[in-house]
Amino acid sequence: MSNEYRHILVAVDLTKDSHKVLERAAQIADRNQAKLSIMHTLEPLGFAYGGDIPMDLTSIQDQLDDHAKHRLAEIADPRVAKEDQHVVVGMPDTEIHRFAEEHDIDLIVVGSHGRHGFALLLGSTSTGVLHGAQCDVLAVRVGQKSAE
Image 1 (cartoon, rainbow, N blue to C red):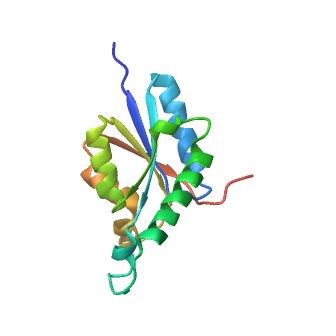
Image 2: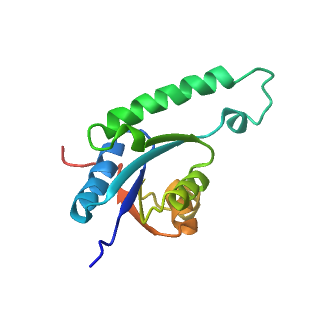
Image 3: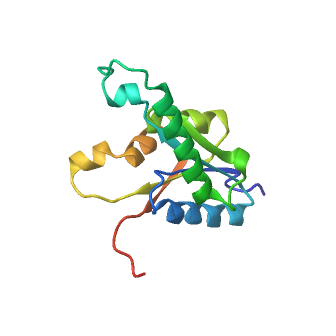
């Protein structure tokens, strides 16, 4: 009998909750002997600022990219191999879907803040990921007060 999940993608926002999301995915990966990849998406600076700034944002984008790679490594190590840690630039749900299709991902794991209200729900990355995904999506509840 084949394993249900062979390649799991963990999409994180680099906050402290990212560890919880990765841990949940790692438990599933262990049970299924699945490969684990982790990714973070940086929105392009030109998009964030509407392209109105008359300067070259390349060096700033590179610094953000380097910082994100370092932070992702802190979260991923030692659970996820260096070559399976990915920082990409683009819109999160679009890039997550693209990565999932290109790498035969069969489960995407994302953090969800579980905010209430229809407008907040529609605006969240986890909702965007869910709606366009070709595979299963697990939203791990994060952000609420936990007994630490």
